[in-house]
Length: 211
Image 1 (cartoon, helix red, strand yellow):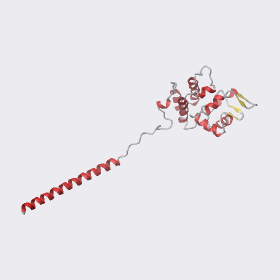
Image 2 (image 1 turned 180 degrees about the vertical axis):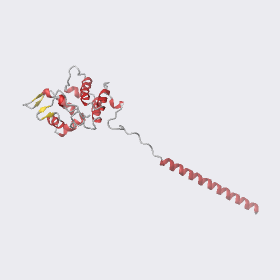
Image 3 (image 1 turned 30 degrees about the vertical axis):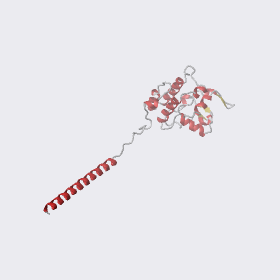
Image 4 (image 1 turned 30 degrees about the horizontal axis):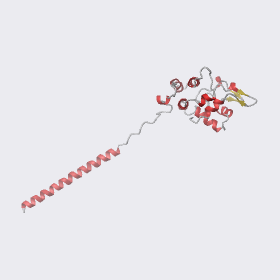
């Protein structure tokens, strides 16, 4: 009887030890699981990290244009120089440097990525105040009337189109004021009859669906 009692007691002790080890294992596993699930998964960094920040990817061009000078001028808020650089690089992209102006088909065929790069740089570095897409939005708001657009964004003073030197190349300029619109427009307007001539490319630009 004593031997049987000893064996039984040993079996009971062994069972108790196994149960205790199992309990410790479950507790450790539970703590590990809670620790892992409690650790937040870091979110990917937002882009841009600050408004106006650009990367090389945002300077993409379908024809190899270099938009770094435009980016740097806009980042420094040297808007007059940036405006001239905008038209210079656009004429280069359209292969119209010798002519110094655009035709309607030049704007219709202007590379989408390049147009968006130029617009994005203006929008980003002006806190959303300037850019072709901003001008297009206003153009649509005024019923696609170029003269009303000019009045709204400050390209005209009374009934007169402003001279280039009179434009406001600063962040306080009216929304949509820059890039300066289409410097060739004033010379191509026939007053009296109220007819706009040779500005079909302007309408094409403001009608681009990729803006």
